[in-house]
Length: 178
Image 1 (cartoon, rainbow, N blue to C red):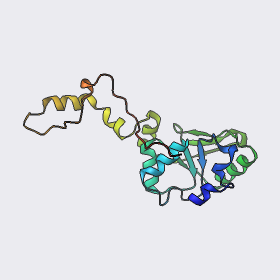
Image 2 (cartoon, rainbow, N blue to C red):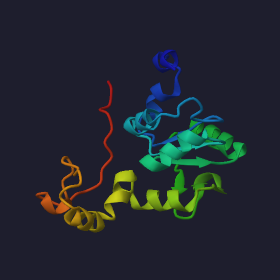
Image 3 (tube, rainbow, N blue to C red):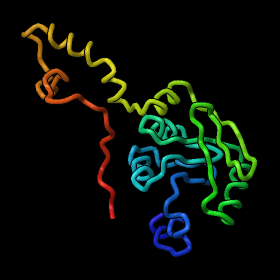
Image 4 (cartoon, rainbow, N blue to C red):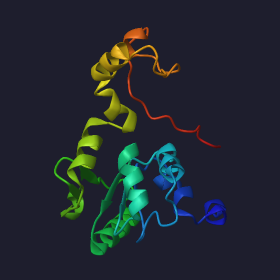
């Protein structure tokens, strides 16, 4: 990948695509990229979604957990999008997570994609694993307040009631590399 990235002919080096937020990829995207860093790298680059015909399972699961939308759509739709983007890089593509559809109105393209209900819920509500846990902050506070003093306590954990302001879930990612 490093050699491709340095080549002038590499699509991500084409200035026509510099503001793209959707990556339209080849088949089996994410194979061999199961670590969270693969998702972080795409998101740090500015991508909010990836379209492909198929995704590696671990990559797909990590993407949903971290807020990157991945939609597997038919190969014919991928090829139509590639061809249309070559002609017009500003082609509007809509990924509707609520209705599980990918559309390109100018092409009269509208295809559905599969997305499990829990991942859909996470994406629609912007929840990562920490955010899911923090939905139960009151129950955690109650449990910690009632913990017998002889039990070990999580000394680094600060209850939301002990913080200066409200706790907001966020994604901690490594800084973007130059």
